[in-house]
Image (cartoon, rainbow, N blue to C red; front, side):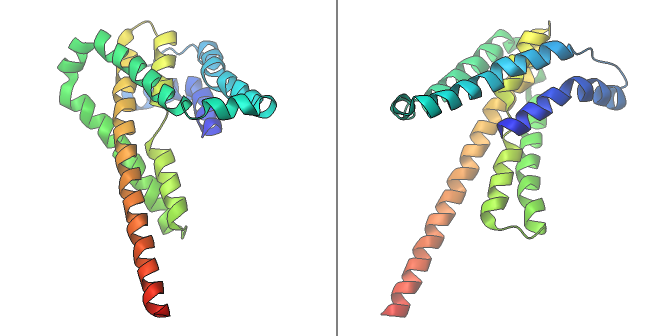
Length: 197
């Protein structure tokens, strides 16, 4: 996931202007060096620090592993909340079209991420993993990159909305799939119990 995010982010300085030019007919200037430096700071440096702590300070790693997921959720919520609060009037003005576009992107990612591996003959676990990976793009990273590398604060708004939406959708899909697995496991145990009894 980190590698995929890093590669796609490093490709952004080339792909964003190219796709914008092709699809919208105008060029959006992108500071390639700034995006790459920001990606190194926001993605790769924390991963390197985490790997180092896990390797050389495993006791510390175990001690903080119970609270770090919650801290990450809190920090992402604060970052996204800050962007949305700063651009609230624009968010209200954009309203349903912006929300619809963001939901469409993520629902499409979840659906295609599940369907394509299924059509290729992969098992349920692979399909669900690819679905989550495809549907839950790192929008919080987009918020940070947009805030640091573009002058207009509105560039971060779609990412902030996206981070919120994909977090809710991903949690819902994970909860449904977890419930389905528990139900399937329970039925399997009952069938085994009936067969042995």
